[in-house]
Length: 114
Length: 106
Image (tube, rainbow over all chains, first blue to last red):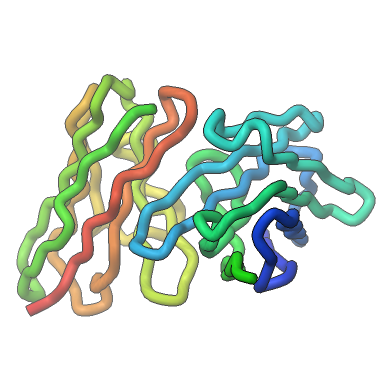
């Protein structure tokens, strides 16, 4: 069974970087596309970007200057880094397989606050 | 970006049929997908590419539409269907989501 699990700090200070890990079991990240999506308080959802089976990436233009998605195929993990965060980056962050996402992690709530 | 517009909320009685709409600001071909999300849980894919039932999803759920107007139908509605339903398009870049429709049961 394909399973995804996000991990990372729940609290980040403004202007710092947010770093999250998505650990995948039951399926290799060298196949398919693997993405990050976030849900803001109030329900708005935003697709952030993905890393492909080959390691190529695609990002939402609204985040392009701040976002990086990388991977470690030996650990079957992929990562999100979002730089220069503000309080507006407070959200629940999900990792998912493919678009549309057929498998999702449980999500991790990240608060940006001093 | 492509804006997807959904009604904020609907209330129906168990056993009834409900249709949840999603209107796109520009054409998305058939690349519209539907998710169900319950509080504290991750989204669950229900329908992909407008009308295809995702694996393990009951046949009570169906999808229709193309271009800019899409509908998710639940028939009959069951108590467990209380949730927020999101549409997502992946035809235009970047992929975007609707604001969600909260379905409540009377």
